[in-house]
Length: 66
Figure 1 (cartoon, one colour):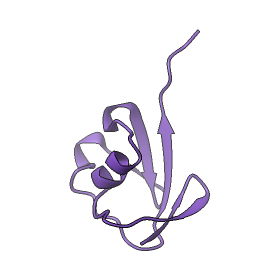
Figure 2: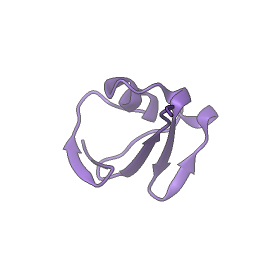
Figure 3: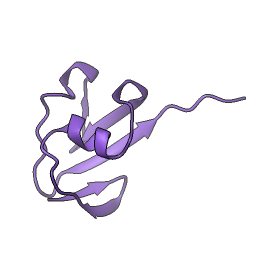
Figure 4: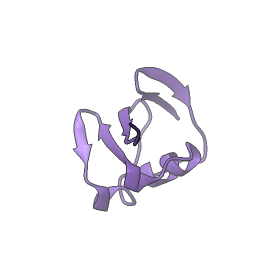
């Protein structure tokens, strides 16, 4: 499946849901905000959100620091 993630085209395999993708990217779904095709996905919906070929995602990760 081809996805655009943060403006970069990427081919990913064995990914069905948004949760699968975040796990593959080693991202903790509690520490990110995801926009899928210009729609923000609620944290409770990550597990059940199916991905399709050519979906566009923006993934923002929260980082602490000072």
